[in-house]
Amino acid sequence: MRRFNLSIGVTLLALSGTARAATFTFDTPPFAGSTALTTPGRQVVGGEPFITFNIASDVFVINQDIFGVGNQELFANGLIASIPASGVNIVVLRTFDDDNNTATAFGAGSAANLIAAQITAPGPGFFIYFNSGLDLPRLVFSTDLNDNTADLKIVARLTNLGGQQGRDAMANFTAANFDFAVPEPSTFGMMAAAGVLWAGMALRRRARG
Image (cartoon, rainbow, N blue to C red; front, side, top):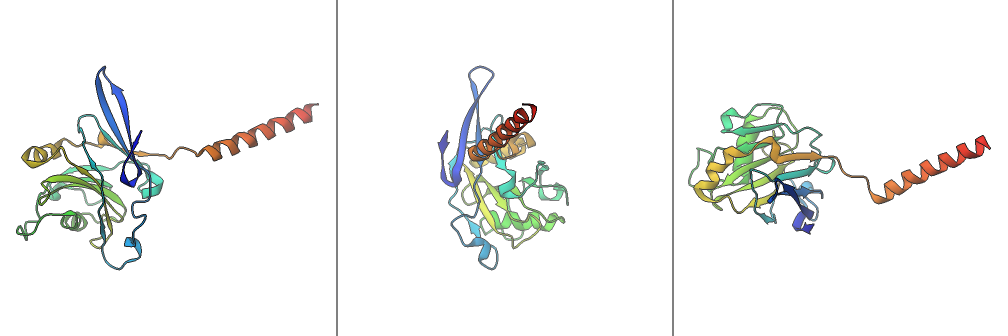
């Protein structure tokens, strides 16, 4: 397993013979090492890894406890007007500019503002948008999709989906590209649980004796 910035683990899974799928795992606090959460106003934290993502097979695995997103992927993909006002924690935004100031590059803040104006229910979540200045999509975590001042962490830059081909590919993202995972128990925790189980069995043996 390789490790990138933000402790993203990449696991290759064999699929149908020679085809392989990559699983990109996000399992560390998104704002670790920054003052974003204690600084007034919206902070956009970059430093994201550059990855190659195959929409047909690859998966983003999100630690649901660390990101606070719950255990259910509530997915929407479309133009901003088609995004539901509630019941969404993953958005693939196929609106490529804010339609109000096209002279300004369409960045994470612009996309987050459109989403916040559309979504009425508060809650953390993720969105993929197409950055017009970089000419490629990025995956972003927002502490509150409904809040236009919520802090944002750029989670990944999808370097293979640039240009018009990348814009067209945005429609192909589905809920299958995301998995909100339950964290695996730590080795220490598993050892402690085994110790408790062993002690209980020993007590029962003594009682029978």
